[in-house]
Image (cartoon, rainbow, N blue to C red; front, side):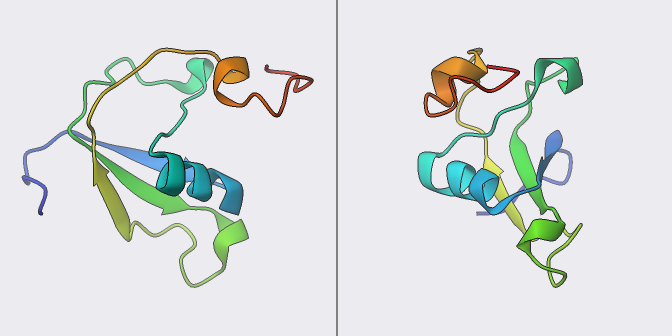
Length: 88
């Protein structure tokens, strides 16, 4: 499967291995509200891992995923194992 060159793509920064696992295994990516773009109606997500995933992949886009839907929810609902988190 390829992405249309004219497609609207959101670059997803995944700073930790846990963030990459959440996206890969559970099939979702979270965008903090204060950093969310005005338009989230995108066709694909480009994945840019942070330094925690190693220098070989740092700041590079080597993975992408087609968007199947968008859901507005809270951090507390998505990350139930972090009820005491300051942004929960």
